[in-house]
Image (cartoon, rainbow, N blue to C red):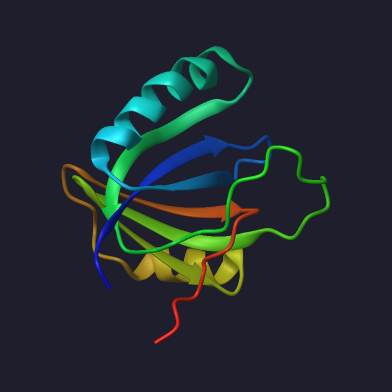
Length: 127
């Protein structure tokens, strides 16, 4: 599977959890252009922005929907960012993600690991 580019936006929820939004894009230039329009809105809003960027990743996600109901299921992910690359792994629960996070080696400069929840799910590639 060819690597693509995914915009990742991580925000802090009121309960201390990290929420993730994923947008698959065709090129890094397109991602950066879209992010340059979105970032000022996020930074001036009521959400606390933890991370926002464009990263190389081969994962594909459902489309983001701004009008999701409050009670929609949330999916747990371990998001590992290392420079320009992101590794995103789905977990069965937030507790499973936290267990995986605790056994990861200590992050070095340029690396960050987050347990997140999202209303979006991974698209499983056939093959």
